Structure formats: structure tokens, C-alpha cells
Image 1 (cartoon, rainbow over the protein chains, first blue to last red):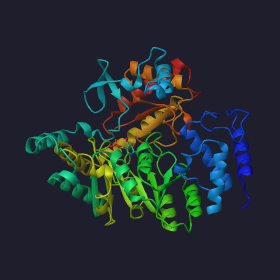
Image 2: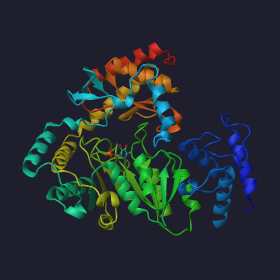
Image 3: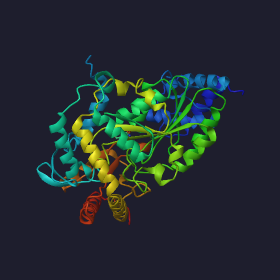
Image 4: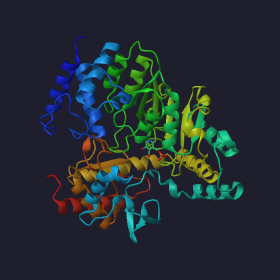
Amino acid sequence: MSETVASVSALIVKTLLANPKVPRDINGSSKIVEDLAFDSLAVMNFVMEIEDTLDVSVPLDRLADIRTIDDLAACIVSLKQAS
Amino acid sequence: MSIFSKYEGLASALSAVTAGGGRNPFNVVIEKPISSTVGLIEGRETLLFGTNNYLGLSQSPAAIEAAVDAVRAYGVGTTGSRIANGTQGLHRQLEERLCAFFRRRHCMVFSTGYQANLGTISALAGKDDYLLLDADSHASIYDGSRLGHAQVIRFRHNDADDLHKRLRRLEGTPGSKLIVVEGIYSMMGDVVPMAEFAAVKRETGAWLLADEAHSVGVMGEHGRGVAEADGVEDDVDFVVGTFSKSLGTVGGYCVSNHDGLDLIRLCSRPYMFTASLPPEVIAATMAALTELENRPELRVRLMDNARRLHAGLQAAGLRTGPQASPVVSVILDDVAVAVAFWNRLLDLGVYVNLSLPPATPDQHPLLRTSVMATHTPEQIDRAVEIFAVVAGEMGINRAA
Ligand SMILES: Cc1ncc(COP(=O)(O)O)c(C=O)c1O
């Protein structure tokens, strides 16, 4: 697999921007809960969409350590490398 | 800074709910039940359409008598856990009764259904295992997953293909995979396609746990739940359930044919470190189980009532879940409308449950209603009529 943190992060931003409620000025360092005003359920549901696109499952306990979009991208890249 | 300051958002959400002069929905008091279907609320006789008392057995004369007799014979409490302070004869009897009812070899009884999920899920799925949870799982299932140390993966609600895909991604990884589904989902009343999940389980070598909290006593020819109704009981490794719904009391259980279940008694913290069920609850539960077994007509009446309520609410132009089941939820778009609707229903003598996001699937507020076998057709028609009146007042009945 050729995904990098930057490419995954860009893909996450693109997926998020498809939702009209998400602020337009987000980037890799945006905080998912604070800057996007997502509650815990919204975070889990949005991660599910990303999982489908990238064919990966992110265990829920990993989400606890994730604050920014780049954190999520790094987590996904490490899961893909492990598999 | 106050220790409560982190709840400021919650406080303002709560004051928004009561801002229009409405009640605090979490403070409604049912002063006294008049029967299984009518309760005294604000001094008025109110139709109860917001319980989980599907068969009406919380008011069963036989269960009441059994509880009174047990209290006189054994006292009111056990004062401790079975591991620390001892198992009583009645605990054993209840477990044997449940084994016979479910036709399974092993049973563990817990003090609530919540603890049954916490205690089985956290103990079954260990550090190197994977838990696969339906996205719309009950809080007790999510909490069980947090009490244990397994890796937790969510799959799309009621979507066996999505689960299959996620299991495929885990192919070759060591560790057991435990799938958790519910029989009937408590918010929308939708039923799990259990046979599809059983097929995925067989194909992938995973284990399957079904929480039949809302479906035991409700589905299946003998009332054993969706697994029985779908003919796949052999594929369900563990059935978890509760006494607090169709059986009308309180407590929970796990039944299984796997001999290992007995070991769980010694490593399940929600089993080991809390007091066991008191005698009167056990006696009432066994009496209620006898009624559940001997009166299959209760299930027939329950499903007739479910269809009547579901069809009635739809005919009134309200949006409901797709399936007629004992839980029928009216789906609304706006929290303020839902709150006003719920208040007005109570003014007019119908009690239902107001369910607000994020506790509901896909962010919609719900008026969650539930039927009982003991509702009369007239009571259901009356409730539907009141729903229609309020919908009319609020201008939210779609052109029917
Ligand atoms: C699906 C489900 N599982 C478990 C429980 C917990 O049951 P109990 O109320 O007996 O703790 C409930 C109900 O609250 C439920 O809806």
C-alpha cells in the first residue's frame, strides 16, 4: 500500500468537506471534537466512512488517543502497515 | 472551578428542553400503577405506552403471590455476592429454570441486564481478542467493551455484509472474534436478521452473542427470542437477557451450551463484586417465567397490538420505524417539536418515552412507544387518536 499520512489526511479532509455542516477551513491539524463540533457518536460514524474508503478497521480504543485529523491519518497508516 | 463545570453544555441543553414551560421529561413521576396499562401521573389516570412491560407481568397476581411467599420464607435480601457470601438455593433453582426454558446447559444470573452484558462481554473477550459490535448497540454493550481489554470494532447496524467485510480484514490475526447483536433494538424496534449473522459466524469461525433483552417472551414460538424465530439457536453461542422487560421484575442472565461459562463466574467483575438477587425477585421471576411459558396467547396479543399501533400511527400521518414490533417509535426532525409533542401527549393522558440524540440512531428525536399484551384495542385506538390530535395541532402530520 502506498498511503502516506499526508495522502490519508487529505482524503479525510475531502470526505469531511462533503458534509455541509463541517467548517470550510479545516486542515490536518484541525481538532476533530473541538473544531468540528462532533460528538462521540458523530466521530464514530465518520470514522466508519473513512474505514470503508480505505478498507481498514480502526478499533474504538485507538480513537481515544486521536485529537486531530493528522492523528487519525497516522493511526490509519500504522494499521494498514501492520496488516 | 466547580467539579460540575464540565456539564454546563448538558445543563443548557436541559434548560432548552424546559424553556417553553414544559416538564423536565426525566422527572416525570408515575405515582402509582392502577394496572399494567394505566398509571397515575400528575394525579390523572394516564395510558402507559412507554414501558418495557411487554406481557404486563409486572402486575401478575401469580408473581406477586410468589414474591410475598418468598419474602415470608427467606427475608428480603441476600446482603452479598454469590462468590463472596454464598449462593442460595433459589439462585440455583432460577438458573436451572432458565437452562430448561432455553434448552441450554449453563446459566449465570446477574443482578441486572446491564450487568449481564458488562459481565459476559468483558470476561469473554480478553486482551488479544476482538469484539465486533453493532453500531446501534445498547449502552451496556459499549460499557462492557470498555470494561474488558479486547479490541473493539463497530459494524453498520443490522448489516451482516458489513460485519463480514470487517471479519475478513481480521483474517489471519490471532485471537477470538466475538460478534454482539441484539434481538430487537430498543430505540426503533427493528429486528436483527439473525440468520444472516449466524451464516457469517459459521463461515468465519467467530463466536456469536445475542442480547435478546427485548425479544425474549416476545419472539419465537416458545418465546426464546429472535434466534428461535429464525431457527438458528445452535449458532448463537451466548444468549444474554433481562428479567426487567417481558418478565416484569429485575435481573439479567447469560445462557450457553459452552462448559466454559462456569469459569466466567470467577473472573467476571460485575458478577463477583455486587450483591446477588434477593429472594422475592427470584420467586416472582420464576412465577412470571411460568406464565410466559404457559400463556403463548400473550405473545399473539402483543403482536396484534403492535401491528394495530404501528398501522394507526402511520395512518395518522406520522413517520415510524419500518417494522411493527412491540417498540414503535415516531421519528421527528426537531428536538423542540419532539419535546412539545411529548408534553402535549402527557397533558392528554398518554405517557410515552422522549428519546433525544445522541441516544438515538442517526440524530433524530424519537417518541418511543411500546405496547403490551394487556393493552385493549380501545386503549390503542385512544392513544393513536391522541397522537393524531397533537400532530394536527402541531401541523406535522404528513398528507396521509
Ligand atoms: C438491549 C438492552 N440490553 C440490556 C439492557 C439492560 O437491562 P436492565 O434494564 O435489566 O439492566 C437493556 C435495557 O435497559 C436493553 O435495552
